[in-house]
Amino acid sequence: MAYAIGVAKPVSVLVETFGTEKVPNDMIASLIDEYIDLSPFGIMSALELRRPIYRQVAAYGHFGRSDLDLPWERTTLAEQWAEDAGTEPLLAAAVTV
Figure 1: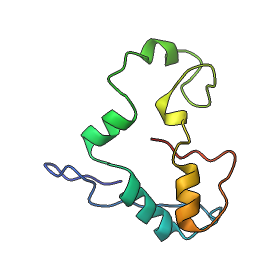
Figure 2: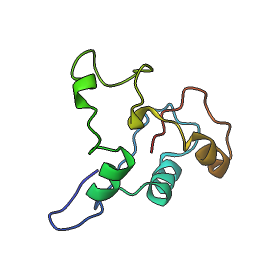
Figure 3: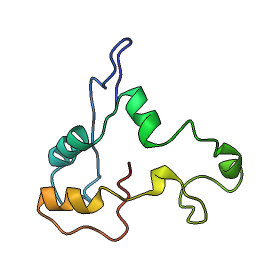
């Protein structure tokens, strides 16, 4: 993502899946644009960044932790995106928000 000073939404969003995609990268970018608010406020809200959870993730990392309820680990959009893209959802999809 690329942001410009004074502009809330990104001026550019690049999707690169390195050949692992099941749908075209431009469709993935369209789904991101449709479903995710990439403004700073939207990101802070969706990922609950004002919630006091950072002491818990200061040790042992903050990705792939099933012992904590981390908003960026949720896959709530995976099924909807798969339906919109005309494909089956992956069990290990990492689509958060």
